Length: 274
Ligand SMILES: O=C(O)Cn1ncc2ncnc(NCCc3cnc(NC(=O)Nc4cccc(Cl)c4)s3)c21
Image (tube, rainbow, N blue to C red; front, top):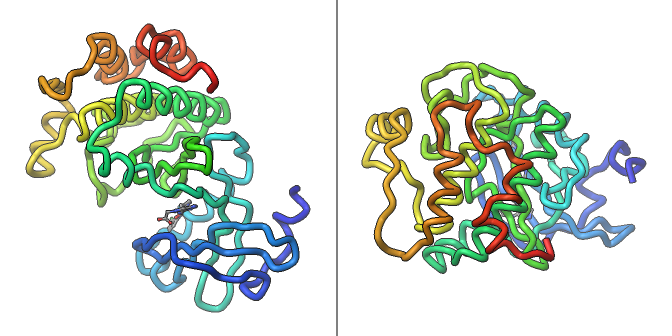
């Protein structure tokens, strides 16, 4: 309930468990709130590093945005607290960790698994877009898996309100960015539609579509929409047709997210229980 979100937590309210992951700004630990015995993930961020990288405003925006998002496929940010040198994010615990590890372990997903994940993602992103929130950083590392295999979009550290021309300092990979963002132009919610297409390709083929030895080559392949499909693994024509509906240079012509569930490939392959 929101009653808890606003109370002042301290680190002494939690028992800290095993580290779940190591990040650029700090680590994530399994933790349990002592009174309620509620299990969470606790991300510990060092203020010094946040200040050094000048991202405090981004963190504040993330906390603000996440406070208003409630969806089964969006990882909850229950609240935060801080002490002299650290900021702590109280996060929903995703018991099966990063989807990325499963993708690497199996090299690629089959069409039913891929379509089911993509449908969940489309619904979560459409929910964000109805609240004028663009995630902007949809990639396997930001997708977590819950106890029952359900997908959770996480890390709204790069999200903004639409429309935006806020530069995404291209420190990370360009692979998931649409042409309008790599070109630094104004962009809107449909940047996430593009990323959904990149992700579909990566689930099915094991790597992103515009991968290249260096930034410049990736940049060129994205702005030219230089999309090629390898002959292996074997992928259906319907899957390729679905990807082509999202990887469209003209942002206004990308498949709208509410129409994803009516796509023939999604209908034929996504788990109807979703
Ligand atoms: O820990 C792992 O590696 C994987 N793992 N495994 C299970 C699990 N369950 C829950 N969460 C996990 N990880 C944290 C996911 C995040 C959610 N939201 C974030 N936000 C953020 O980092 N914001 C942020 C940071 C620094 C600067 C700025 Cl500007 C913004 S990180 C889990």
